[in-house]
Image (tube, rainbow, N blue to C red; front, side, top):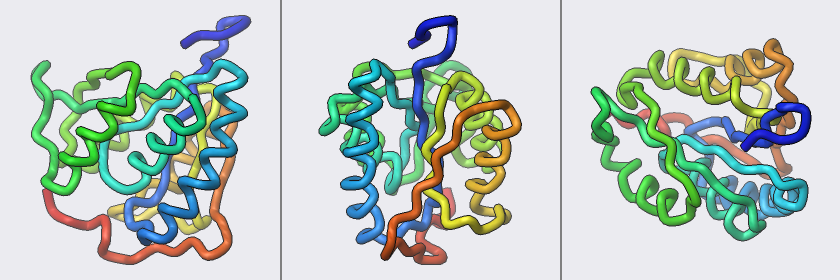
Length: 175
């Protein structure tokens, strides 16, 4: 996953967890075209397992011919129990992926997820941020991750297609 001059060849996705279903469909189409260019450049996609955006990214990556790495949380070196809503999505992402990367963090702990995302972003050359430009809050860390990537010299591409919407409360299921 390391390219010329030691630069990572990895592209990751971050974004809102409360994207409307029609927004996910819009994004899958939009991402497919963008990721096809990345596949031609020999890049690899990286996504943390979960429903919504990770699955849309995984499907778009597969359709674009982009190799995909799925990140699975572990606790004490054992795959962590995911929320019900994320289990089926994780299964689909594992089927779409060429590699699986196990990362130690508690998927039920927001701060642990954010720290895991920060570690993952440091290994990337580019981040695609599905972001409407709003500030982070106690449930959504997208703005934080965009700022983090930029502050570490990681190329960030913000995507928010016309007609994209969020549905507050959608990504707030308790673990």
